[in-house]
Image (cartoon, rainbow over all chains, first blue to last red; front, side, top):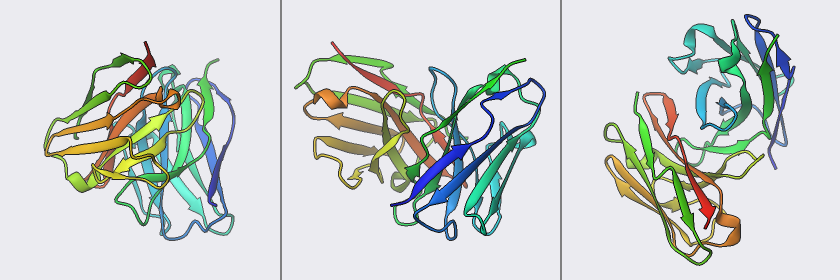
Length: 119
Length: 108
């Protein structure tokens, strides 16, 4: 059973860089698109972007200038970096996997990591 | 970017009743790439329906997806206590994904 687990600081200062890691267990990071999705408190879901196992990335245009994603196949994990954060970036951040079997849906999700932007 | 608008924002119903959730896209969406997720408080979303009408593994047959073009519907034929939750539609196109803002199904 594939499992995803987010990790990283729960508190980030304004203007700093948010960094999160998603560690994948029970399966290989190869051959999939790996996603980041966020959810501000009490609000809906926002797709942030993906990193493909080849290293190819694609980001939500609204965040593109501040987002970088990468992966480490040797450690079976991938990372999200979001620069110049503000309070509006406070959210639960989920990592997820794009199913290779079903059409462009997210079949496995991490439990989510709350990141608060505050001084 | 395709904008998905879900309605109503909140649906207040009793167990055993039928729930009808709407998802309308700002432009035509490939039916193959329209999905629905359920999210309960403190949990990650769970895939319910993909390809507009196919249920994911383990999803009860009371969850029925339908629609095409820019209008899609998720129907829960008879609400069970565990069905009271948030529901999101999602679409994929041009190498990106968008979600609707969600519909909350609450106990009346």
